[in-house]
Length: 432
Image (cartoon, rainbow, N blue to C red; front, side, top):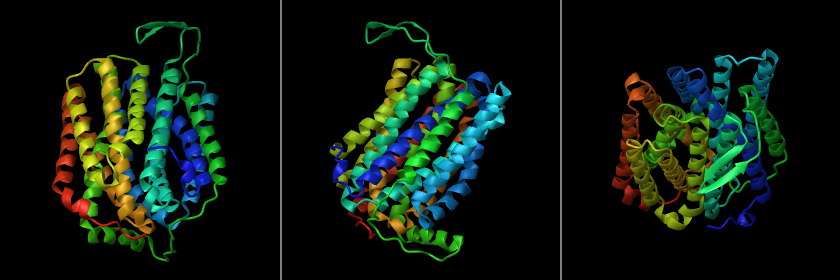
């Protein structure tokens, strides 16, 4: 799949959207790596962070439903501007407080940064995909979803590399890479959390300015709905009730992503610190390897699985993820850890690209925000349950069983989609 963005409608709008996402997403990625590592390594409070993440996940159950109605009611561009403005105010405010205090930030403020970014994700990504569908032609859906994944994961890879540097610093000396001894003459002190949060807040401002300049021509028509919040939400529910196959597909194809969210924020900090016995740089490099795998998926899945084979592709990605989790159960080698996170990045991104392409083709843009929020509810409930489960002392002390649960969920996804395969392939695309 070539990156032929110039052939897309609204090329300038797409490029500016990608640029804004890259700028703010890189710093967000560093913050979202720094916070769980701070609770794991500095505070040594894994259960506290897991409780914060579980609480944020539970609240997002209701926030996600409301966000879906906002996405379908208001300008998606306006939503991007609002979320960036809010993020800038909160992150810069907390960073300045940290500089003023000249000491470690209180953990509730660190948690607030995590929760703010987490809630931002809950509205940003559904709005992003709805906006992409709105400004693209149907024949471009597969390409635009792949481009979004490549852009997002390239940003994550950059964030992982940046986090490895900022969280650990650089000390002059010789490092060994691929059999070669390399001397690095650089020296960089590791950054404090308030410095990282200030960088994050500034990138929100830059993203705001870029998005404000976006001009576009909608490729699908949206009509105003003068209805109450409940009535607007019921329209989304009604669509999925009338299309139970899409409801089943939307949830089953989400399972790999559910496991990745639990893995990245709950399991991996504990695994790297206490099982691999490595420092922050290994955690960040693992995140970078995950992103590289995802970029590869963005480039390759369109060639491996054509548009008519998206369901088969998602089944394959779920099986690949299950295999990676099975190996993780027994692995204590950091090199193999990087390889497995790369495979998980490939499988997660591949499944996401094909899932979104299928949904774009079968859900009208007018209601896609609300339909997506229903899938998000199921996602949140599952994450909430698994976070609570793997936060128990038994699973913290026996992490291999957590990986077993994640692998089993991926197998369940593959089995459910395989059972529905013929019906899903035969389902005709919906109207705009």
